[in-house]
Length: 564
Image 1 (cartoon, rainbow, N blue to C red):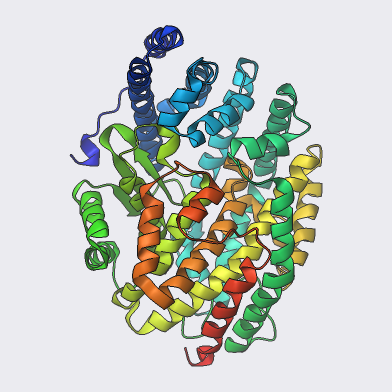
Image 2 (cartoon, rainbow, N blue to C red):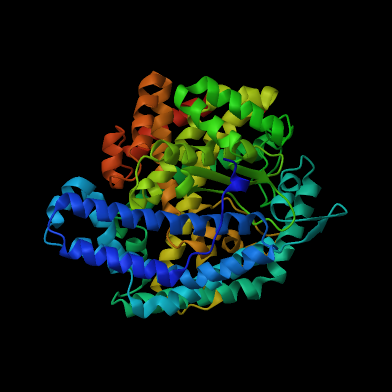
């Protein structure tokens, strides 16, 4: 069945609530484990149906944010999402307080009960109005980004449509494109500031109502960080500052030398070679055809997966008017279907979507046997391992996409992984500072960002752009608005993905087996336990970063980047 045939119907909350409560009451009085598990299965069927409708509404809204029907449905889910979450908490309480909890745990797994306990710690009926308000502010941010109508080179473009000009071979074009892009943010700066300020205060208020010192404590619980703490994350950031920042800085210096520049300006950072960055050599349909060929040749598992995605139209990839920015992968439970959303723009990022988001989709396709919603996906930092590692497993097929630009792609992809990690921890530390001090003014928040940029990205030169020099870069980073503390996850996963890159260069088959094993078990284990299952070293171990940096530096050193 194709995605267009997937039926959306707004759920009847009152009926859902009555069915939920009836089943929960039966669980609470049941003394038979088999009966309990059957009742749990019935509740999960209802929950998966609700999740299906929520996801269909979200996907169709982001495909066209100007669609009046799905705009209305978006408002419904913003308002009712916390109400459905309240039903989940009633279910969680019934299991956690049940006399047969230990027997259930033996069948359903330790991880599920830890996740349920976290959910209960992060919710109470008292905060439902605050959660509704939080959802509405996030929706305002998404719509504001999607509203960008930038006139450039005689045509109206959205933010994604500006990307090819930001990477132009012509330096003056890059500069003008960046200026046009940031003019949009400057013109809407006060509205972005207001939305974020509201979000920070709402989240701080929620945390205080739930009895936490600040939102940092609650944020970690929301992110289901079960087996590591903010202190461990702070130590990881310290290692990044000491070991990776110098390597990243040296890569930027080499880049400036390649471009015959005394130093990089902000509009040069993403432009790697005077001959132009690596670009795919065909349009969207051609890319999909190449992707299908790649996944067919890679393995039986990926062949089956890509046929399912293409045959059922489960990818919306082309940027268009009214479409939300960015990219994501989600899962439509009742149809057991992953879905990939993106905005192709003719850059190498299009191929990254076909590998990164497909990595997410492949994982959830492999673990779709799991009926329990909480365990279908791994927690965020673990999920990003699947996506970032798939980027490296596809290297053997990159020549199909990039032809003469293949070596450029390898160099920028691997070097970009190293450059990215300091930025990722900068985003994380910024959020810690913001939520530790929720009453900072918008200007003070920007000063915090700029101060941290000078630590983690000391090469950045914004002297020609007052908006960025004033600390405004972070406003375009959607995660900061939408999912607080979801960013260190990318850096932890990047370290793990680089371990897979290192392993596959020694024995690709063994690396692939570890990867498949990781995908197959979904979210049934916590982050550190998933790493053990996949034979990966924890990024929190002191020598982990050094062990991946050495082979990466050697690989990059052996490429004559000046000839590319």
